[in-house]
Amino acid sequence: MPGIDTDSRPTDMPALKTPPPTRSDDDLARLPASERIRYRLIGAECRYHANDNISAHIREGELEELKSEVQAGMQAVLQSLVIDTDSDHNTNETAKRVAKMFIDEVFRGRYVPIPAMTEFPNVSRLNELMIVGPITVRSACSHHLCPIFGRVWIGILPNEHSNLIGLSKYARVCDWVMTRPQIQEEAVVMLADALQERVKPDGLAIVMEADHFCMHWRGVKDDDTAMTNSVMRGAFLKDPNLRREFLSLLSKKHTT
Ligand SMILES: [Zn+2]
Image (cartoon, rainbow, N blue to C red):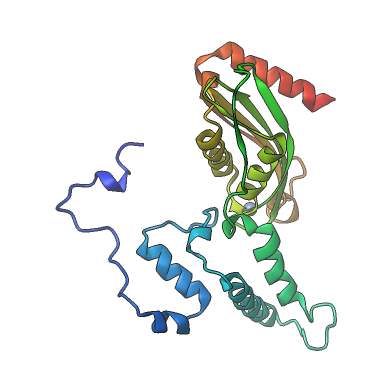
């Protein structure tokens, strides 16, 4: 998008963010892990929104430290909710459980690198439309941290220079992108970028259909709130027949 690219600003303009004061290793070691990681992110001018992966800035052992911090924070939330976690055996370990669930499971895609995948050169020069899906999506909304459950379909039109990855890898990359606090419109674009970069197809199409629990559990409490988003790139944008073929195959899979 023109106009918002920060690198295109005139060189005589001041930097958008002043860099943090430089800290010594000893100083850093005394800080909570989250502040250390944030310090590195700011130093590297990396964005760290809810759906960004920050694994490159996390050192060994720091995930365990983060878990303890989140546990303490969650305990404070329970305290503010006036829940007696000492006598109530049900909530006794809740802060610890939630911290583990956030870091190791439901937001794991922020903290670990993209899953390893072997790429195979397209030796048989496959150039037929390939559809992967439905892949089950388990995510959470950035707004309320409520679950999002859904399905994703991926359409790939390879060319002779594409790298092919094993079928199960599509699901693993999808899980890596989705296990973060997400916004559905941004999630499909992130998934498309991750696949585009590795597979390098002529065309890439992604459709995501999902149910947002923040619409059931709170707010309008509407029970019919599935949301569908799609991304079409390359040949899928240029060729309406290909797009139609993908969508019709997808709707067939949908009903069976
Ligand atoms: Zn929400």
